[in-house]
Length: 329
Figure 1: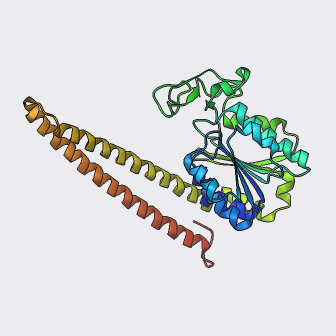
Figure 2: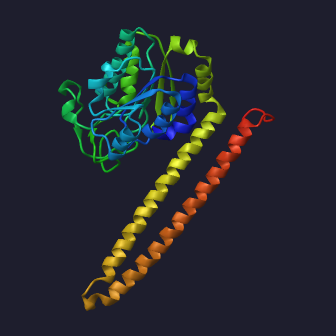
Figure 3: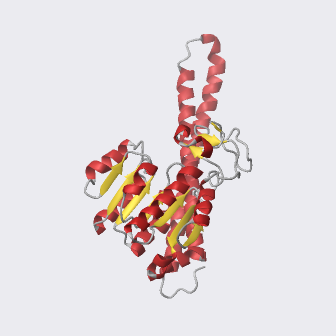
């Protein structure tokens, strides 16, 4: 969710000015850290929930204990105990049972506090987990709400599991079935919610669904203007640029890993003691050396792409913010 920070989350914080924020699924602290900068400046409190926090998150607790409360527990054990929540980020266990009950807990607690439900951002409404469950701990999900699952990969355009992404997770065997996936959980929650909600969705980078109580929206003009901008060409262009930046970062990481692999293989080849392999090893050494060179050049091209994208983004920002500019192009 941290990839939405500049485009959506920071403007949302400024429009909403929440005093109590909840982050479910803090993970490595990629979003937690930037949130704490805003929280400290505005005297707010951030509740981060993660049953297995990373070391980086523990370090943030030591540095920002006054504004950060870390719950090392399941979200469903904690959400009902946090009062006066005004903004919540849901990005933890990406399955129907967990997400729908997180939403219900936030709405229920708001009613107990006598206030409007919080603004809620739900991550991973797109592929692969919008219509397919994933489980950090399958045994934590009641059997009646647990999809048949396996540790195999998810494949774009294929309902069944196979050789694909995220094969280290327990993924539901099928997608698109009832009570299956994050987006399905959001839709099923809204169908039976006690209050009136409005929603916006942003595609790409896993996708985000924004849920806001109708009454809260009517009382906050700045929030309304921000949400109205989501469907504008300027916003969508900025989102496309963010997606492209994510692709470039992925290419950089992949090229770096391939280069390290080639370098490791090259070192192993050069250490071989068998003289009978000398000719073949020299040939392989030349091949690997050339591969390392090509991969290094690939990384340089990625850096060039990043610089072009940065210049494009700077130019677009200037065009949007210029007082003499017309309709954003």
